Length: 286
Length: 286
Image 1 (cartoon, each protein chain N blue to C red):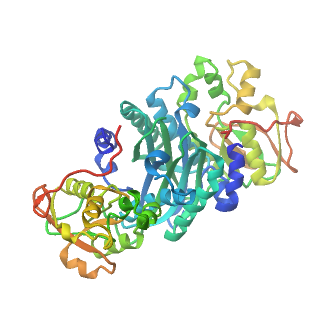
Image 2 (cartoon, one colour):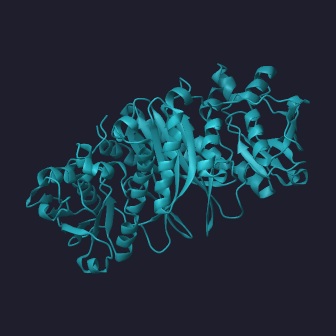
Image 3 (cartoon, chains in turn red, purple):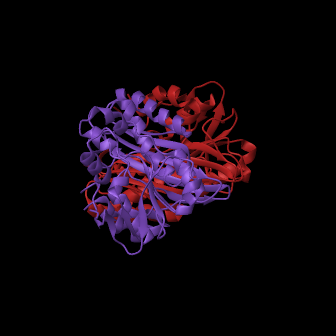
């Protein structure tokens, strides 16, 4: 069973609304908070060779990316650290702090614990004071399907291409871009940290739509082998770019670089170059 | 090295303000948020014999207790679950939800992950809209030293006394009491989940004061062996009662049951019945 299947088990318990976005939503009188928590383990989540500083950075970046995917500004990060050896603490905390600082969030401490395998859980709070979060539900037939950045770099780095090692280990969440998409009228959004294909399926399922994309329009690193990069982008993961949906007439107001890779369609099929797109990506398995 | 010593290592990195209370403090224009995260592992934190429901309950209760200790109302809980086997999920989530419901917080999902040892990290948000949080700094010379409830029950349960097993496994955080202490003018507060003695030392250190308490005034279960119960209360842990400090003339406005166990003094000594109180309690060791 994978984590998306498990989510289906607890949806009836939590309520569908609770389990369907990158963040939970908490409306307050002075704005809307979005909150997210992410658990990372050394063996399954941190590639060998990462420094402690990068481990701290990445732990925070994954959570900030979830906040960015709602179109919110991150304001506070808490980090629970299950530490296998105390020497690692200051490196991890420095990396976590650097990531918070870069994206305008306060690093507010957390919890310390001893554990046989290094385990990090970051929890973040973001805020929107001038609108409402962009969710996974909301994509409409006719909307443009768009992504930020170039995709596939993280998996290329993981598979040994040193040029992309830093992309893998120090992901740069798209906070500014997420806010720009929200204010321009984006209808749905998520990050593609589990891969582009599975993310398209997630949005399609939440929004009740189909999609068609064109492989030639997917932005890939120019200097990488095209086939390999495309496979990494579609089915890999680790890229903390945003996948977002926006009416065509709103794209001109978007003041960030982005690529249109396809269109939202009726029905529920997801096709690439006219053929069904495989539904696979990064999943935790039990 | 224990977790309080490790905290001293990261204080210079995080800033003292960040690491000195049960919760971090996040001021917004519509109120003050308090946030807390707690990591629990099966082997070190959950006594053998606890049900999955109780494990879910306790994971949330520890965080709600931290929020209560700031005098805040819990509003949202996120739970990151590192699961060793999928069968346990629904029991854990049900227990977590029950605890949220009892204390008025929304259970807002979280993260799911596979892990060899069951690991739970709960993160909570509380809010205060009519005042400011009660911190560990703030106890003044002359203040009464007070506790809620009866102490020592958790450790008595852990050491085999079946009458207290439920007290150990289903702690009842003192949310109502924490808010009452704050509105009555409490000057400092924390929960005593690591034991009464170490908690007195924590507040004394933050507030720069000494303390004298009287063993006869410590509320213990009436039907337990007194010596054993006193040892459990002072140096054990697992009791999610509140230790709070309040000027004597404010005690009459407190509309909750509580016990005055001593007075804040000048200097930095902490004495019980005129003798130095040992500084020990529950600590994670590396």
